[in-house]
Image (cartoon, one colour):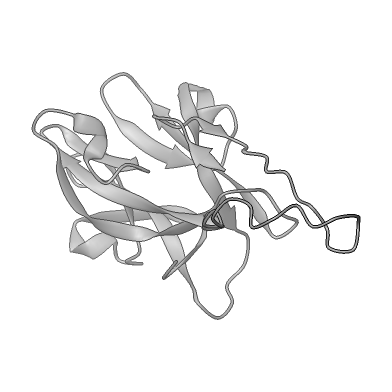
Length: 159
């Protein structure tokens, strides 16, 4: 999978020749690095709230500042994952597990988040902060600045 800007991704195919299937084709091209099965999600502070993004540069939004990696989501769906969506109300961004973004605008799928805890995974929470904007956090206390609205799922702590 190759990121194609924004929340878009392309699947990349590569031809494979099996040994013993005829004459040797020669040395061939250099090996292509295998893409990681996961990707990071970042929390960004905006002048008007927070944004959860797959881009380390906070999508180039003026005044945005990356606050760190929240965790790692799967690039593809499996039986043990579900989609994590980014949603917008026009003035605010938040994450949701609802494909319809709870009646707001769907900005896209950030990736696939695990359904249940296991080794190497931590909970990802959606928080409603005291100033009424949403924030995504790994803290069950919303870092002391708001109230927990729920667990969105579980993220890997490393790639």
